Length: 527
Length: 64
Image 1 (cartoon, rainbow over the protein chains, first blue to last red):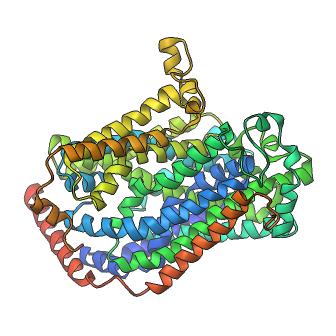
Image 2: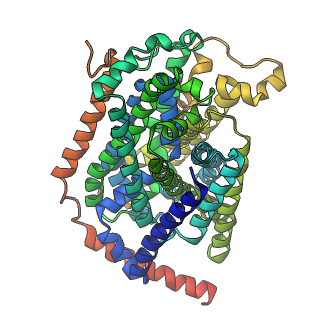
């Protein structure tokens, strides 16, 4: 890859993004225009914006790489991403969130929950969970893009990470406030075209759909002994039931991200800015196709990279990537695709990273400014705007520092952990807010706190992957884990945290006084 | 049984399920393409009023 050509391509890309942002901004100069623009927002723009925020480099590079290791069983994640992340999210959660958000005049997700249950604690507690948890997700999105630059440009990874962070920071600070839906839509379109091309060319290179799958099936004997020992059986067969491989694939990768998406603050906010259910209805169609193409392509291509590498180099993907899952997709694209495509794909990844990161940083900024600072100090106005900006800056810096320190093969794991944490903290509260009138403020608070802390406890002391590498329990007791009996060290925190949160929310709600009728009438007006 | 060169029903099942669920989204979107904007006008008016209120409040509080 040529640095000069790359600079030109990136420059052109930024001019395009800048131009679209500028046009959107021009069209919405007065606040009245802004509202009208919102009303006439094309459903394509809305759905693409949701999709581009939902899907980041983590999905493409991280989970694509996971597919290279675990094989096509990960396609269940595509299924859940569409069924839960699009269909259920839009049709059942989105419509109610839009209406209730309007009734409560809520602007952020923590604010929504806090007004629904009339509790300030909920607002700053969720604000803190988001502000402290989100950096992990933001940093793995950065890592995903930086890994590609590292491979494509032969750059030092740390330098690639800083370049990425600077580009994104400039974008978040200078743009992306008003025109963000439009730039998101442009980025979504680039992602869509890039991924469809990648899928078609991969199938073409390997001789067709059935042929390439067959070739992958025939490679099952190449599964390394170390992988076989933990339950891997091949790339077109599911891991052995109950094995470590199975637990990671099912409980962390498929369920963590598949279910966790419902409680993602940066996605829930999208529903509150939608003008009517019509956009959501139309968004289901566009969003469904978008997720199908992007994630489906990434996972199929990730799996099939094994065939390509074996035919070309006699090695399977994880060997070519020297054990770092995050490098499988970047190396595959650099060795299998035409050179011009690596430039286009870098733009695809830039788009994917920027659209997600801008939303993440924005949500983190408002979490600390509006949800924590304003709520605790009971202030509003200019100071909280300043705190929000500082919050965004701090969020970027933390993400970069984490990017330097996190180990390899982290992108998909980090994403799944964050999604799981959000699910444990917010899913029961959010679901009850929308669907269960009998749920009470104490019930939701206890559920939320128990879900969050159970999940953290599990991460630090029971879940093998995190507990061992963090080493906190070892420092206290000299042992690695509290529970050593299988399968517990392999079970994802989400599988424990979500039911615990749900249990406490329901039990405490039933034991406490139901909310007043007036308050419920206000929340559920027009339902 | 092998489908599309994939031997395990748990894996080709996922492949097919992805296609089916995408079709579900497409059909839902087409059937409801023009539905759901009944209360739009009223809401936009309401939100415009709020926006004005908020601007006035800001002016009062901040003095500009």
